[in-house]
Structures are given as structure tokens and as C-alpha cells.
Amino acid sequence: MYDTIDDDTEPDTDALRSGLRTRADLVTISVPPIPAVRERARRRRTRRLVRALSGVAAASAVVGGVLVWAPGRESDDGAPTTTAPWPTPSPSLSPSSSPSLAVSTSEYLRAADLGAGWTGPVGSTTSPQLDMGSACEEEGVFHPQIPVAPTLNFRYTFSPPGKPAIEAFEAVYTFAPGTGNAVMNRVDTALGLLCEQAEDVRALDTPTVDDDSTAYTTGGGNCYILVRSGDQVASVVVPVMPSGSDATAWIDLVTRQMGKRLTGG
Amino acid sequence: MPNTQDSSDDGFDRFMAERWPRVVRSAFLLTGNQHDAEDLAQAAFERACAAWGRVRRADNPDAYLHRVLVNCNRGRFRTRRVIETPVAVLPEGLQNVGDHSEAHSERDALMAVLNDLAPRQRAVIVLRYYEDLTEAQTADILRCSVGTVKSQTSKALARLRKNGRLAEFAQTSKSQKGAA
Image 1 (cartoon, rainbow over the protein chains, first blue to last red):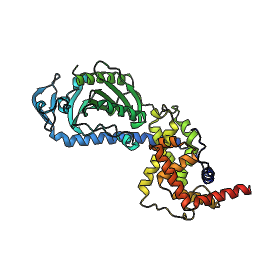
Image 2 (image 1 turned 120 degrees about the vertical axis):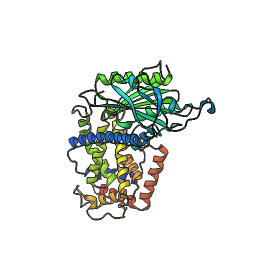
Image 3 (image 1 turned 60 degrees about the horizontal axis):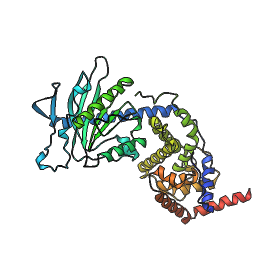
Image 4 (image 1 turned 180 degrees about the horizontal axis):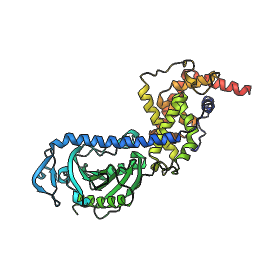
């Protein structure tokens, strides 16, 4: 498995080494329970998905009550737009180097961007931190990155006739000046360390509209798309992503729209 | 991006079958009894299976497996430490569940030696002296510095030497070699 070592040749550590092997060799080895392990792994992925969805739904129910609908403001497709429920500093009071708050980018993605049939935003919840999922924290490979302002998540839904509904949660995180790149590096590092059970990680090629972006799917079909521009990181999570070429096309489309909205391009 | 983790020809079966014996043995040294060892090994493989898409593309899947094994054991100990108290001599039969080695007291002494150690120190000992990993490899698995591995190893060995069990075990081992 690994390269062996020859250090620690003290008599007692040699005896310890020998004893450990002798003792371990006496253990009765059963047949590896591969089917049972596979089944438990499948349930584990399902549990994590359900936990993620129920958490977002519960938070949406609580926070949704304070969602402020802006009368008279309509997006291009007629869907109402939203504003953040907390006071935001006016530009004149903010130093030029301060990042803008979430309210300025909360409508970076619109239902119309996602294609015909999508509706939203539907409800919202706040995100205190960039979340990659509980597995990352359990493994200790990703420490949540804290934005400098609360960030709203908005939910969009797509319910094609005869097919399961698809939901997408979008948010834009604003990090401290000069730290956006480091945040994405930490995300990539976490993915490289098996965080969040990512199955497929893509460095997306959209250089004209954003600084860098990545997408990854996880066990159970969750799909995360992260796009960074400067110190802002846009995130879309699709809890149940359809498989196949539809998913690839959808990810490319959404990534382009995310980058476009982020940069105003 | 289809979810292919449950396909039967993704290589996980072979991966698990090949590593199962050694992982169970390592788990036994970490836990002290066979039932817990098998549970721990299953938990580690379960996580590896759930993340199989990434594990199989990793540079060192074995390192991942060891890391999960140690982390799972640490979590297991956290949940049970209230009721687990290290003792000088293990209760009769406790240390031999399932492996039919009642007659070998020196083996009992060895398990008692390990049970005296804190979980992290036990992990260091098992990784360094059973798995024969380097300090750097052990540090990578435990997600700590090489210096921490050195100090943990030193403390663990000092603890074993202090209570005399390591010397006693070394003497027993030496006697057995001489007799042979």
C-alpha cells in the first residue's frame, strides 16, 4: 500500500511492531459484506440529500415570511423581484473598496434565464456562509467561508408535465475584498480532497464573463455550480439534477447566465 | 452527469475485497475487539463507496481509506468515551470476542497496551508500527503536521514504557524468539 520505513529500530518498538502484526493476524476475517456496504452507501447518499432538502425547506418556511416583495418591480419575464429584508448601506456611505451587499445581485439569475417553464424566485432563506455540505465539515477539509454580508437564496422550480419537478437554489456571496480567489481555491482544494463526495468536477470554460467557475455533482444527483467574479461567488444548487446530456447543457447554460449576471456583461 | 455509483462493475467490489482483510485487522487494533472492528471497517468502506467516483480517481485511495478509518474510529470513541474507561487489565473474555485467542496472554497484554492509549495515539501507533507508514504519510492521514506525529508517537511510546508493558512485551517477544 505504501512505502515502508526502517526507522524506529529500538528493540521495544520492533517488538511492538511484531506484536501488532502477530495479534492482527489472529483476527478472523469474514467475507467482505460488499452488497451491504453498497446499500448503506446508497442510503447514506439519500439521507444526506433529504437532510439538505429538508433543511432548506424549513429555513425557507421561516424566513420566507419576511420576504419583501417590491411592488411595481417586475423582471423581464413578469416574475416579481425581491429585495433583502435587512437594511443595506447606501453607496454614499460605503467606502469604494467595500463589496456591495447581496441585494444588488439577488436577481442575478432569472427564471427566464433557465428556460421556458421555470418559475421563481419562490421563497428565500439566508445563507450565513458558503456551504459545501455536511460531509466537508465532517471530513474537516473545508471550513465554511464567511461572506461579509448575509446572502439570500432564491428558489426556482420547473415542473414539466409527467416528470419530477426540478428545483434550483441560487445565491451570491460577497467576500472580503481580495479574498474571492482564495475562497474558490479552498473549494477546489476541498473537492480534491474528496469533500462532498463529488463525482464529477468541471472547470468550466467561460473566460469572457467571469474569473473562474466550477461545477460538481454529488452522490444522489446533487449539482453545484459556482462562478466567481472578483470577490463575489455565485452559487446554484440543483438538489436533483437530471442525468445525461440534458444536465450538461443545463449546467453550461446556467453557468453562462450566472457569469453574465455577475459581471453585468 | 449520470450517477453511476451503484453499478456493479465500477471497481469498488474488487477494491473492497482486496483491502478488507487488512482494514479489518487495522480496525481491530484500533478498536480492541472484532465486532467493533468489522463495524468500523464497514463504515470506512461505506464512505469510500459513497464517494467512489472521487476515490477511484484519487492519487492514493488507500490513504483516503485509512483517513476515513481513523476518523470513524475517533467518532466512535467520542460517542462511547463516557462508558469506556481504560483499565490496566481487560475483563476476562472482553478482548477476545470472536477471534478465539483466549490462551495467549501476551496478546491480551498487547491489546491492553493499546487500550491504555488515547485514540489519536493509538492511531499513530497502528499506522506507524502496523501499517508501517512513514511519519509524513501518517501526518497526511491524520491531517496534522509531521511534528505532531513525532510528538504523539513519542508520547505514546513513553506512556507504554512508563507503565512497563512495552518492556514486558518486548521481553516476552525476545523470550519467544530465543525459545524458537
